[in-house]
Amino acid sequence: MRKIILLVLSALIMSCAEKKTNQVAQSKKEINVDVKMYTALWDDFLSGNTNAISNKTFTEDIVVVTANGNIQGIEAVREFYLNYLNGFSEIDFKIIDAFGA
Image (cartoon, rainbow, N blue to C red):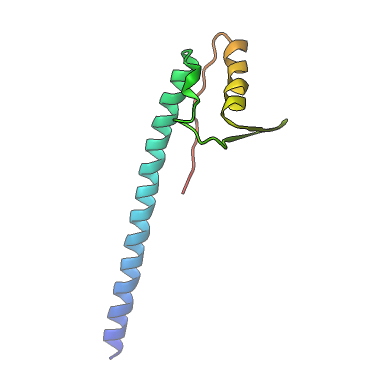
């Protein structure tokens, strides 16, 4: 009887570990897709297409957190980043780290 219980518990533990591994792999895959999408979006914006920041690429209630207060809404976010685009002739944004779950 002990062997059966031990076998069932071992199977359950292995099943849970495999499920967690699959979830981590799926999360990493989703993060990579998101990073590619955001990289393409910012490259488009920085090349001069300021309409890249729109309700097609962001939700209407977008919030950018800054040290000087939050920037809320698509128009405000577009204007915020447009200042960088206009202020720096050789601007280069790079995503150096991303996280998510």
